[in-house]
Image 1 (cartoon, rainbow, N blue to C red):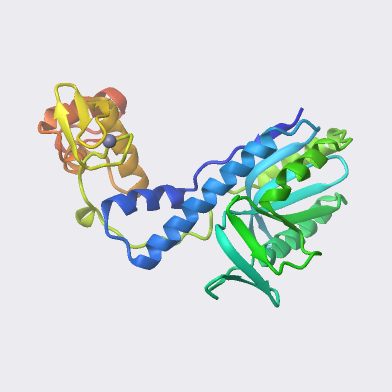
Image 2: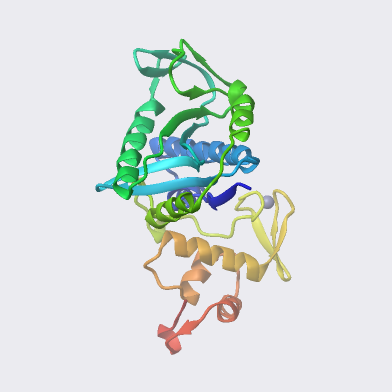
Length: 303
Ligand SMILES: [Zn+2]
């Protein structure tokens, strides 16, 4: 009975970049950063499908952010079994890479981050934390290359790498662990959970402002801006998807909130944001039905 302790969600950074990517022209470097972030997340979700299937007794943390001695560490996956703690750094690299003097290169000689460096740092900080909490479980740290299209040439045998072709075997072995969790493990899991901090300190966002972002309601299914109103629905010219106006407006209110946490939600702001809804009254009605009004007359806003 593995108990998933913490599930994985897209980071705020990724959610915001996703919205900005649609609504503004991101600088090339930022675009690349966004694509990498998105791809990384997809890889992690794929890895979760494997840990989810584990039958041995263990606690699973998908994505753990800890601040240890004022240093932040992020662990893609952490598994507590009775005798060992496993940590995984998941990489969704695709294509041909090679390893040379502790560095990792793409085939065209462009160097990429060696995930081992981050992994070693996380392992060391986590060990310090466990010791300070009075636990002495050994930590086994591995880098998982999750993409089946990944090849790494010249990888030394002793490195803690798990390649796509080894994943099934690796998990079969984990599954056969004679793991018996006790009260102590549960306490540790609770402690780690309480130390988890939600926000990534690594936020790298471009500057943006309301006036310069593209307005309109994007399609809920294909993200296209080619949407129009037909009776009670927002319809998409690209894929034919239909969505109730109220649902679409509230989805866009969520986007607005995420992008501009300090701005007040007003009828005027949402009217401008959604752009394709012709009547302010309709916007007002949706906001009134779904949110709480604060204040009166023309200075009122919604929460
Ligand atoms: Zn669509």
